[in-house]
Length: 347
Image (cartoon, rainbow, N blue to C red; front, side, top):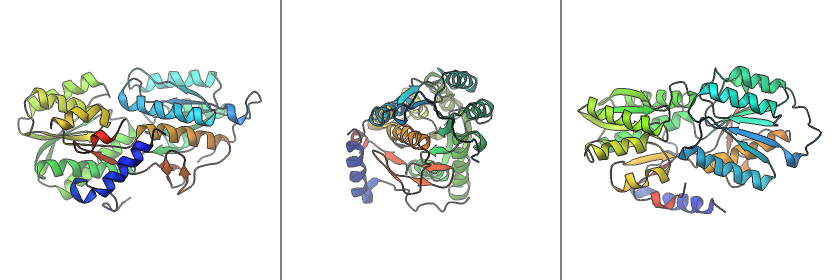
């Protein structure tokens, strides 16, 4: 299976953890209706012929392409008809249009990664009224607009860990900036909140000089990173809090001949960051397996259509054990990628 390599590399990281891998396990003390009715049975389909639609924030970037790969593998394994369709840019209006089309197509379930939680609420409630199940993954909407949310990791754990990875690489002092995807995305806002919390209470000698949006656009992200380097002469670090941020920041550091002066960390896939980690224009990136996220979303979608919600500690084939708190699934813990381990990962 495609995930054997992931399992092997995860074990390897655990074995070498005493060396240069920083584990988040037990590192942080966490501080902190569904009433849509049963979906009408569609007489023309059996349970092996469900039509499930996944709507990403946008298409044709590495992260969401990997999610699609995992979702299609699950659909093939589970006998699901899968529609994977997102907007060309990270825009909630485009997502609304796509969801309206899916309602007309009479899909059984819509699973969406929201660009904006408020903008999608009305159309998702319309879907529920038509007997279509609604769940979210990667980025949530208002609770009344969906059955449950599939989150990759605890938001607090991830946000605080991202700040830790920067602190480790800049000696816990100096100016830094954060590049986010969109300020309306609820997951990014939660991560940003906990990054700021971790900095204020644990790294007082670090100074946040800027938070900038990239709209998850690689070209805009590169220009944004270049502008940050030019604007802040004493900049020592950049956190990229979406998949396009770290590669863009690393490329900007490379072009500005700032390797060794500016550290780059954040959220991105190993395949996007391999060259930058190896040439030291980036120091560490963190992520989960987006393929597993796609596989998990389709698996739990079919389970919900069969009348069963997730359960705490449930073991999902090709994914592992999940956490469940009543309306949110937690897939697992974040993984750190460095120049030493990046070649063990193929997503």
